[in-house]
Length: 386
View 1 (spheres, rainbow, N blue to C red):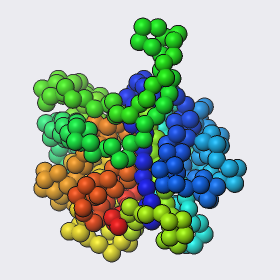
View 2: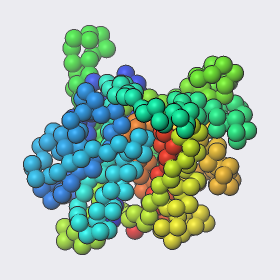
View 3: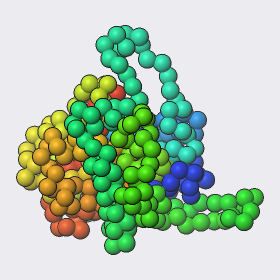
């Protein structure tokens, strides 16, 4: 059972959240999660925490350190998971599987990525030469270009997806669609007039959305990865800071504690694909998740596909035949990684929180969230509102 799912507001690169550590940000998020559900943290058996760049402030098993930073009892265990962009969807999977198997009854799943403070790639290591004998490993932006080429996607198509993401996110903010999932964060921020003076600030609104953008502005951006390419900063996910968390419980524990579930996990799917092309596994992961859940695309009311790049979204829509559903607003109805940002280790839990809220807003039953993953993977989850 998904008892609740919350997130911090997402901070733009070097923005408001760049002034707080990831473990301290996460501690506020998980404390808000248990407080608003009147759960004693001592009841939590494990914290499954996603994080990609596990170095510096995000090192030393940040999952355990989040529980300690939050002031929870030492009995609350914690671990850190790295399935790259799908890390906190994997923690959802881990938590649900532990409950399904009867090994655990109350778990916090989630993640964090402070991309301003711990830069993406700062934990880079080496890869075996044996891998390069079989595959040409490239950066994700090159894979995004390869997908655009192989699926015959134009710059105009990708810019339109990017532009639509900002439009939808701005509308969602104006209509208060994120209010139930966002928990305000308290932090000290340097005063505008004096960097030496810190001002206690309540941060409660996503700040990466570009309300002023236009298709003309997006068309003027230069290719980000290759000359004459179609992938730009405007149709790629934004570098941001953020944290999100999901409270997962067995039905028995929920009843015992008097908790009111909002949804349930029905099934998950993971897929491995060519690590050169890398980002095109969403349809495969979705098919597996749908099969495990015993539903079809016709049963799914809302779909979240992580906007790592607009070419990933376009490829997903083409391969699943969901273009009309996207136009109708059933796919990424409230924007996504291009507008809100993609805080790597937190995004799986973030889109889970957004999906649950949107199902409730529509009074709809089934939702699906899916994410492509670096080095050729994808992960998807099907949930049901209860």
